[in-house]
Amino acid sequence: MKSKVPRYVLDSFALLAYFQAEPGSRRIKAILDAAQKKEAEIFITTVNYGEAIYITEREKALTAAQSLIAAFDQLPVTVIEVDRKLALAAAHWKARYSVAYADAFALALAEQMEATILTGDPEFHEVGDTASIEWLPQDS
Image 1: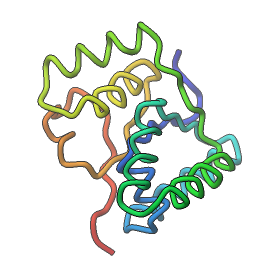
Image 2: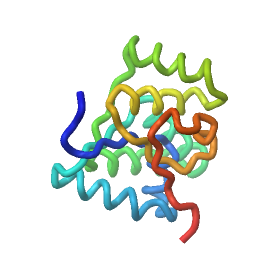
Image 3: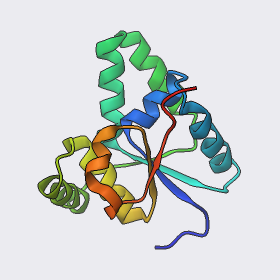
Image 4: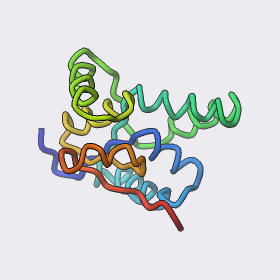
């Protein structure tokens, strides 16, 4: 399944960083621009997508979550439904590492798609070099 263009998986941290114009948003925008030109592919699981939506609703408001959904739908990101195979792969990551369950889905998808996870979430340090991770900047 090796792709000719770089592949990336977003976790909720990356998605929220982009929409909240946090320091990592520039890097994510560059990758989104590349994906728009078919020079990269970007994926997110329904679990990670849903996590970003519930965090937005909880921290801001339902209308903010609805705005995120509308804006997200314009992005060149493929949302991957969680099936049994992906759920079992995520369970395997969760069993081996002390990461949040949603993070385990990003790890499983990155493994399945031979992709790099874009994140700034410190929980991913737990997996060390067993996954390809690009760390988003945390300061301007």
